[in-house]
Image 1: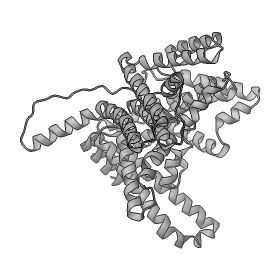
Image 2 (image 1 turned 135 degrees about the horizontal axis):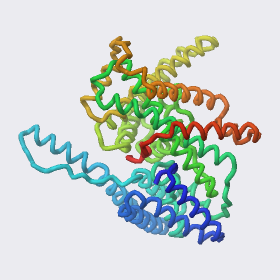
Image 3 (image 1 turned 180 degrees about the vertical axis):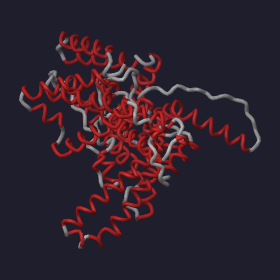
Length: 481
């Protein structure tokens, strides 16, 4: 059930009407939990068993952890939670990948095992709610959070539907206290425009620029470097608008229900360094990896070599979190390499440049060069992320890096209206992204704008959505992760 479908509209109307009838806190929690389970079962009812299993395991483990004082037993309890949750994630997400690679390796040595692909279906959102429950159990184990005594509260924390299948990854310390207070509905203008922003990002921009990227990356060997660059730019815009659009709509829906969810994006394409990019992109995942992987590995506390090792391991596992494919491993490696190189630059080279950067013009040029270099790297890594076939990916990378100077755009079909509209959407994204960075967000401005200004904008958005709404329903990209 997608946020912008007629089915979800009916679902929302029934949910808010029911919540209006049951005004007491506990009945409302029961209604929200039932609605969240129904929302998740819309894709595949059988997989609700996995959420209930994870909920039960982590509730019981955390309950025991709080009263257990023996270190060995506490570690065993934590290991039980880690094994159960990561075991499920590994089975459903990585079994096909491991089996196919094992089969390929055996064929290299002349063995034909004769099995076929296992075709294990990946439950939607399993990476998100697994990390969410794990963070809770680890926090209880560390003594940073008290165990939740109410199973209803904990079940709602795990399954809360706005962010269930594609984030943000919410911490228990942020969500559970909100269940202890009265939560009035919040149908304010900010929630409306935030949801509208997410809808425009997803339906108006992401789904429309995706068509050119999909067409080109289906056979990158058939296209020139110029077209590969254009397709990569389309995916660069698509994945940001698709994912951040979901987060916007999820945060807005939670706000309407009276809940606060953390921001997941802060305009990452204005970053000038890899570390800044990861402070702005998929913030809930990057902070999760920092707090539960990078820092426990030692962070930057044990010398340069171990710091670089920890950075690389964190990004490799972050790449694997996105999917069971070698292109995601390479994507994580490239971002880990960028973080290491930037750290070395910041510690060894940047201090020597500081005296020159007191000059305003040189400082501006330096920041522009830093931004341009990072965006080139991000574009290249998004290409790796997008093309999973190794041969096709290497072909596309070669054309991306070694520009073939073929500027003949006839094969691109510039006479077609769809290509003109794609370029228009790319330009629109650029303008809106710059404007948003300079003004703090168009949605925030409109939420405080007078009615005579906000109303025409709503009409324009409605007309644009009506004219450019894609004919085919496209799920959010991060549903597959």
